[in-house]
Length: 194
Image (cartoon, rainbow, N blue to C red; front, top):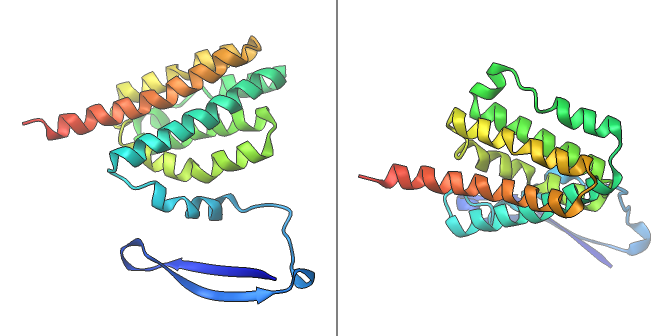
């Protein structure tokens, strides 16, 4: 017997079952793909805006997954992959001027690293939390200078991938994720300062 429990969000973030259906395994249809957006919805309780502990957990998870994806990309890279990644470092002034637009472009870069890595499970896990990371990134990247700094941190990641240096690519991707949290923390401290 397989139980399917469909939920929807209720007031104050509480979930309520919409349907509970039991079906036999013989009647079950198993999809060959997982919807990353639906998986991302499952992560909502773990991605509370303004919660310092949950933000740290999100950044740690991002660093671990993006670090491993970068390491695997270093082992599998091809010239065309490196060309695509390098081209992604070129942003228009408009893309760099807006924090939300930059956050989308930043994650496009990391999605491309995930594609190069060639691990569909890690890529799915990465995609599942990208929507939460994108929302989180807007705060620390409100300043154009911080967006420029974040963009500049992509170049050494590409260099490490190009050199086939998995350990360095992993470390740089983790450091890049942690730097975003540091920027968010400094923004919060400035807001709270008298």
